[in-house]
Length: 140
Image (cartoon, rainbow, N blue to C red; front, side, top):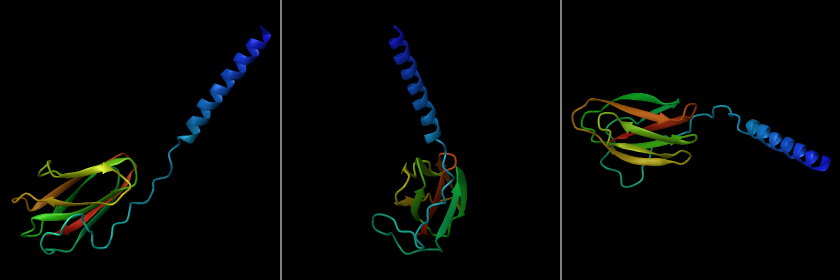
């Protein structure tokens, strides 16, 4: 009887130590720096037209909305998007069907078609809190 009680107490203490050590393993790491984009963003697929303005580049931490003045005649944004962890998404608020998203960690290029009328564009960056990100591109 005494041996069963000792085994039970030992197994309970081991279980408790595993639970407590799991809590310390899952602590948050410091916020990593925003991923770096190439000087002239490149996108997968063929380039469309020639650049109509200087490239744009934004970096930040956490979800944000960035505002961009659309160059006259620009029909596309050759966009590059990176984030440091988890999943993320960039959505053009003027046309929510235009978005790019998925797992963070790799380079992501996308030719974003732009709606014809707005002169100011709003890109909604959606990431997990404390996730750093970079978004940029060239208008064409």
